Each structure stands twice: as C-alpha cells, then as structure tokens.
Image 1: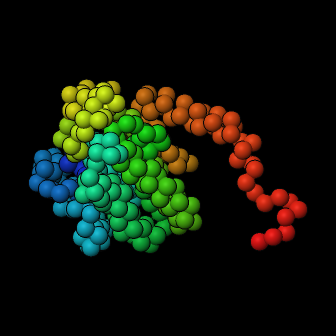
Image 2: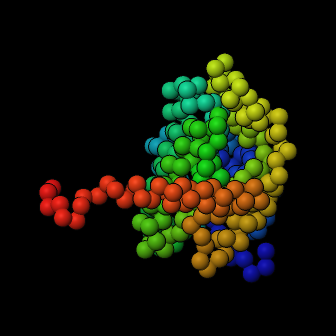
Image 3: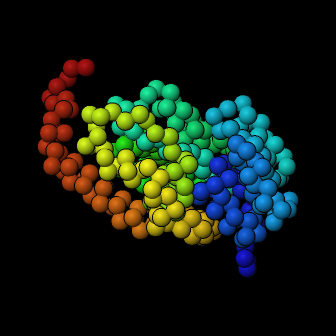
Length: 286
C-alpha cells in the first residue's frame, strides 16, 4: 500500500470469520500480524504466504495467565503492538429463560472477560510505546437487543461499557479505542460459531422466526463483506481523529440511529415523571 507505514497487530480469533478476513487484509497491506487462535495450525497457510510477517500463537482468551504470557511473548517476538483487535467470540442462541448457567458463564468468559484480559495484557505494552489502538469487536447487538440473543447482547453491552470507560482512561497515554459495531457479515457465525440452548415449547411461537434465523441456514448469505470490513478498519486506523464507535454495514448504519431516536422519544415522553424523584429544593434533610 503506497505511503502505508507498516503496523504490528495482535488479533484474537484470527482463524475464521471477520478475524481471519481482517488479518488477511492487514497482511496484504504490508502489516505484521500476531495471529492467535485456539488451534494455530489453522493459520499455516498464512505463514506459507506471508512468512515471518505472521506470528501464529495458540491462545485461549478465557485463561488469564495464558493471555498475559502470550501477549508478553507476542510483544517480545514482534517488538511492539500497534493495534489490538479483540475479535474472539461466539454466539449463544436461546431465550432468557432457556439458557443454562454454564452456557451463560462460558459466553461471558470468551466475549467479555476474554476481551478484558487481553486488553489488560496489552495496555502496559502500549503505554510504554506511548501509542496504540485497541479495536473492540462488538456488534450492532451492542446497541440494541434481539429475542433469542439476549445473553450475546448482554456480553456486547458489557464490552461497550468497559471500552467506553477505557477510552477515557488511556487517552492521555496516546492509546485510542474504537468499538466496532458490525451488522450481518458473510461468515459462519450463525452456524459453526453458535451455541444453542435447549428450546422450551412455551416459547415456540414467540421465538420460531428467530430460531430459524440463527439455525445456520443463512450462514455465508449475509450482506456484509468481511474483506471490506478489514479495508474500512485500515482507513479508520489512518484517521487523524478516529471514532470511539464505528458501524459497519448498511443494516447497522440504518438501525442504530433508529434505535437511539426511539430511546430519546421514550425518555422525553417520561421526562416529567423522571424529574419528580429529587429532593425538593426546600428539603434540608439528608
């Protein structure tokens, strides 16, 4: 890429889906990628194509001690970490009453706590450098909710809250944070990357459409192009003032403003009641 200053990335969940596509786009642009996956052998073809610009490492993001050790190794082998893409994650389909405790804890361990552990591990490296950019892979589900995806949405909302706070805390160190909010992209997310709760017949009518939509039937038929997502992120990284949030895809760009307008309208409708709960100005009590 003409005029492009090569960066060093650390990507979690680099073996498939958006993580894989973004990794490939970064490598094609001349960047170096420390690509992590549970099974790094899935990255062998990238090593064959790009040589030592790919550093494949095994990583289970739910193991905090392993995360700290792997990020330390990544920084030592690569020399620096300019971009962290916290991409590792998967879906959990099921109504709020249908999901079991293990499914919910496992989901948060990967989608929220995994991102938190990797972020914590990378921050000392970026603070020493005085620069860095953290890309947190959220979703349009981090801004709104969907029946049958409540726990997935909850994890993304938690990731967004943590990341927005993080942006305030690290700006003074030259570290930038962007929350990436894709709509539907053409990956296997609803097929191979989905855990499903046991359906309860009581919800058959309510969730019938959502269960079918998340059955895997539409995998690789979604409108979003993963490679174009990677190209968009490269442009974002080059921006003088990159955003805190970036929507990717027409569906996300259409839906997010509508959701916020509806929320504002409801707050305005109930504004008078909201303002009845403070102490009276003449009240001198505790």
